[in-house]
Length: 424
Image 1 (cartoon, helix red, strand yellow):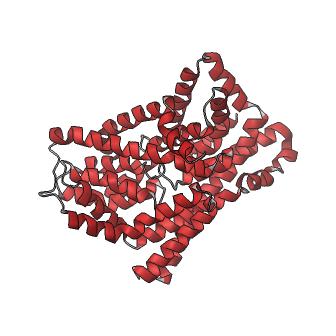
Image 2 (spheres, rainbow, N blue to C red):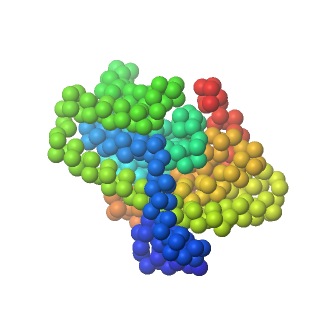
Image 3 (cartoon, rainbow, N blue to C red):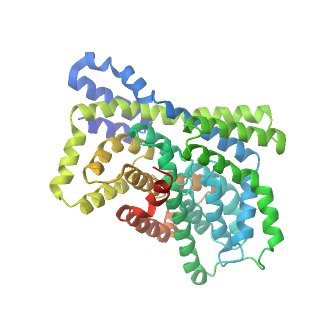
């Protein structure tokens, strides 16, 4: 019955947070009537009363400020100077810029929107089809929430009691591998698609100049990641330092940050954060109903009944995440499915950091899978390109990233090397 209510509200176009909250309230009423539904406000509060959640709006605001100061273009120019001379140079630059940009926003949709307005038109001018340019941008956009700082990692670590610093350290190598896989696909398709390239390679002095102009942006992720990983600051403190750093650059270095612009950025940050927090709070009600009815344990028992082989159980978990990700918002998936599936990963002996990065990477990949992939919708709305056309050009990148996901899942040493080196 609860599932029917949730599905009906979604089909009627209700916001996801409302659908979650109403379904959860119906479940609480079904269990204990008005006595239980009166507990809903406390469940919402408890779901949000997690200190590291404060880091998320600070990271979002820091990204907004850095975007406004024009740092995107500086990073793009640096990326072009480094790899633009290869065939498909601007597509390669898109990927490298996504790595640089990840340390600023940590958001796939923010990267997709920024590059959709800048790199996609630039790629079109060089002779790329708009669909292919959007596909490259979508494939690279998931690098942002994989390489720290990542909003998903903050939420996941807060909910599951996993070290956020450890997750940040674990995400470095997978994010770089996503970039390398996508660049390999671009290189393999270069001649067949006759992708353009720059007429000449940038000189060493030009590369050094671009590094100089981008140095302030490149320092930001080092400050954030270094402070958290080495235990100097908490994620929340690092996020607030990131805002202070971005403000300093905008006001005193680039001098292009006005009070009016800052006000609009704060409003956008509040809007984005409010949507995420509303989803988490509403999902907390539904999560309580799921736990009360022991549904997580039922799902775990079902998986174990299908097979007692840890490798098969892991494959089933990944497939479930990818399939659900095709039709559900990733924030909802994170809040609802993590408490269900992560205990199951513990039962099959997965390291908590390894399980976390597999979970997060699977969610990130779902951002670019139709029909609900958020990055596809962002790029479609920004560029006016049909989702069907983007999805067709995206398939080689999607296949490559899925193969990488399974490689990371079954060979944990690939991603645990750095966190182990740092003592996690």
